[in-house]
Length: 112
Length: 115
Image (cartoon, rainbow over all chains, first blue to last red; front, side, top):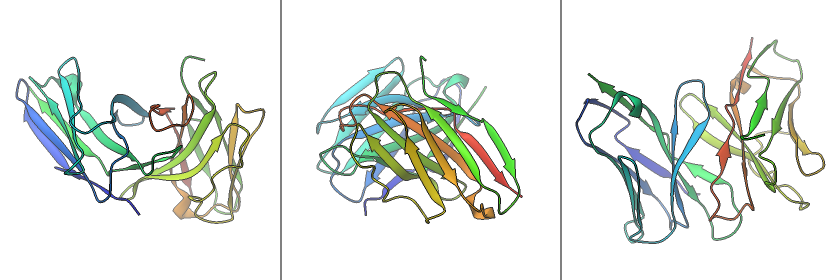
């Protein structure tokens, strides 16, 4: 079965600093999804990457997909307290209709 | 509604009781998923409905778990004879077509505690 490994497991950064979260798959990626979760809430969809080399940005968050390495990265520029939360990557396990497999998450804290 | 709605938001029950969790997907979404999130386990898939097709039940952990989706909209996840290990947050998600090019949108979950 496919597994997603996220690193680091947790991260504490000072406000204004940049940071990167990685997600590595044990198998071929058919689509990679990034979500953010705050305690007691559901997952908020951030971005979806479908093709190797694809890069998407939303506000200060950029995600890239390296299909050959079966890896995706999420980069936050000039972090703010509002970026704090748990970031989860999810992957489609095949090319058709499919539920997602998720990593265990990266807990991000941003301190003033 | 605008988003995926789940109820109740919290449920505390005694071991051995049955519980029903409800999910109201985004209007027009044909695919509906149930996941479970527990400490140390992360998010795990339970069951998936796509239109009128037979559901994919491959993630259900035991025969105490069942789900149905009536009229292609609202879904109910039922856990019979609850055990303490069933304590978790149960999340529902929906997507427009279920294809991998359609993101899944999640509700806020039901936090289930078994005493």
